Amino acid sequence: MQINHFELPVGLRRWNHSGAGALHQAEGFEFSLLDDCDNAYRFTVAATASKIGTIFSDFATHLPEEAFFILEFYPDESLLLRPSGSTERPAPCVFYSPYLPTELILRTIAPYLSRMVHDGFVGFGLANNRKGLEFFCSEEKVLTFFTDNHLRLSTFLHKHRITHRSPLILSADFGHDHVALLGLPKKQLPADLKRFSTSDLDSAQFCSDLVDMLDMYEVEEGLSFFLTRKEQEQISELVQAKIPDHELANFEFGGLLLDWSDFVNECEDGFDGDLWEYRQGLKIRDAIQLVIEAAPDPLSDKIRNIVLEADSDFQRILTDNSKRLDPAGEMQLQNERFWYQGIIKNQGTELRRDLIRHGWFNR
Image 1: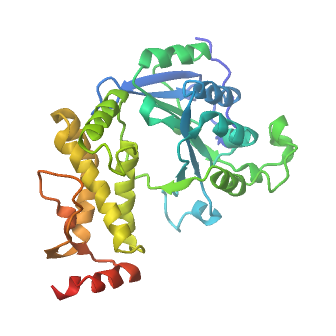
Image 2: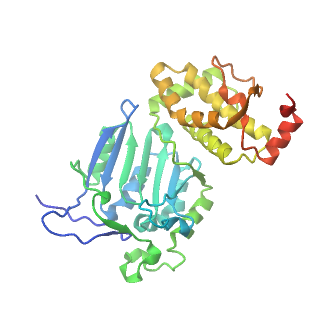
Image 3: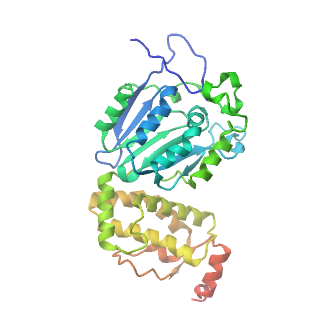
């Protein structure tokens, strides 16, 4: 069988193994159904480096109105240093932009796209949950797509001359090193990157610039889920029917799930807001519960499982469980709301001050 030439980004350095047992990498894709999703798929793609930017830009045309940008990098160089004796790689920080016009995102990142493709410590992507579409290029330079239309995505990849291949050889299947553009001699850089200054090639700097320009925010990677377009349409209809005028009615439900997880993490680390801000976090869980109670069983169970870990963590950090905060009255829920039963242990100054003013500790 003829092996196609496969070009790695300069930020990945394959160890020099040769001989009969050496792995040969070629372009291709595999796909599989996602757990807990009917008709939703994960595509894993190996693409030669020169195609990655084109694939990204072409994928963006399927999100004609708006999307959010994903960026994964190491803002602090110390994150790249492993503790003595550790064999685990440090985890990068992940940032999401808010939903923005797709064209605005593309214009903003265009000067940085080649640097993101070739730097061995940067991952990036583009998604629209309401469209059921996501693309991500990891720091391993493996492309991952999520979709509820596998035929359309297969056609998209064939357009770029990438065909189904099994088994698919990925960078993780062979020994390799990650290299930052900053650590490479200019002569080893692609032609379009040789003109950049040292500071321009610093991924911590140019990624931070993108975070500022797109108003991105850091997210925890512990929560992972995928809601299909059909599921999101069901949820939107339920919310509009139950609480059409509520402040959370027009929020994307996937965003609320992430917000609840982030709120719980913030409460674990130490909540710095006041009582009003704390109640806003609890209202997010109210809205999630509304959908859990109103949705049909398969979808209800799926959402309940998504929030299970965050719920358990929140219950663990609650104290004074014999006392109860009064829940907001905008939503009529059937089940007891455990998140109002007690208060978090790690209270910041403002929250504790407000609790004292409201007589919480005198009950």
